[in-house]
Amino acid sequence: MADMRQDKYPMPEQEPDIRNRNFKEVALGYTKELAMQEAARCLNCKHKPCMKGCPVKVDIPGFIMQIKEGNIEEAYQIIAGTNSLPAVCGRVCPQESQCEEICVRAIKGQAVGIGRLERFAADWHMEHTPVYGTEALIGQTAIKKSVGVVGAGPAGLTCAGDMARKGYDVTVYEAFHEPGGVLTYGIPEFRLPKSIVKKEISILEKLGVEVKVNMVIGKILTIDELLDKHDTVFIGTGAGLPRFMRIPGENLNGVYSANEFLTRINLMKAYKFPEYDTPVKIGKNVAVIGGGNVAMDAARSAKRLGAENVYIIYRRGEEELPARLEEIHHAKDEGIIFKLLENPVSIEGDNKGNVTRIECVSMELGEPDDSGRRRPVTINGSEHLIDMETVIVAIGQTPNPLIKNTTEKLKTASWGGIIVNEETMETSIPGVYAGGDIVTGAATVILAMGAGKTAADAMDAYLRPE
Image 1 (cartoon, rainbow, N blue to C red):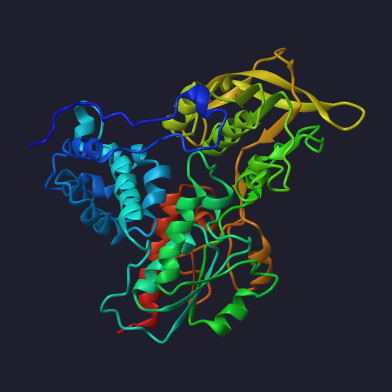
Image 2: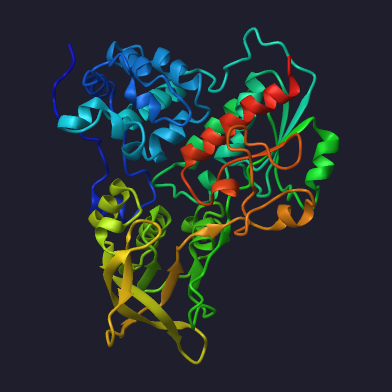
């Protein structure tokens, strides 16, 4: 019998006034008892609507039924059959707009906590498998063909894992000194512990995937040179070039892109300074411009680094905030101040070039624009100044043009993204595929993973047309 409780079983969390002073994970995870109770809420629908919302096609009712019966390792193996990064997805996937959005239980109450259960199964496996990552290519015949993957982020790692499981020799080329892409440099420790990312990558390495770091493709090797080394190539380099507002004062000391700010904190461990020698200087008052998940991550990180007043400045209202509801809720609980319907027009500094104030105008919402959201309109005469020592710009990112500029036959869109066949993810160069943010612009981890999985299937068909 299904548990007819309407709401999800609560996720244990650190208290807000404790967690906003440390970088430990906020959500503590379900116990086995809680996980089994939450799993019992699943109706095990025959038509499985939740699976239609999963970009990597996890058998969601299948793994949840195993948890309900207490068979946690069996649940993990079902997930891992199609998802290369289950512990990551359970933490950062926007389940509320994907699998959980179309859960039947959501019609009258809350959806089953699919993400929470996925995380639980993955964490259980990590804790109870004697040597984590011992999954082998059981019965898989090695294929004497080689695959090159550019970028060790979600798209690249998924493609690499799927191709390794299909029996190919896979090499991943990562520009940074650690693999993981946005999972390592972008998402803070309190949302996604780096130990989790490293364990997920260790599985791929035990499957035979070779990861080469400090490999800037377009500088050290070109895509054409990779094609000379490999039978097929996947490009999953993401969108890591920050956008700025192009307002006066953005070149002052104390202005960061969210990309730089979070990379210093996450990849370079600035939150452990001086144990690690990467400082990140912030003042008492910090403004984060933007309203997405990256803005929430930057604001919550600034609070943990000791800022007294951290503001989210966003030109639309709360209903239009693009961040996950969970991230907004956590930010508010941790004391982040939301200044909505406000738009910065300049940043002021002192005679030493340091930020001192930010000038904003108030906005009101007009008619919908091309995105379907109501367009923000400036209220005349509403200019006002706010004292500020640090400004973090989190208004989006675009692809680095390095690969585009060094690959003559590669067709790209006007904004810099690679153009692909959406069914196969093949680019304008035969045998070269691409997926993730380098194709779509900044999107979610799971959508990037879905693109990597689609590309792997197409690459397999390309290499084994029979």
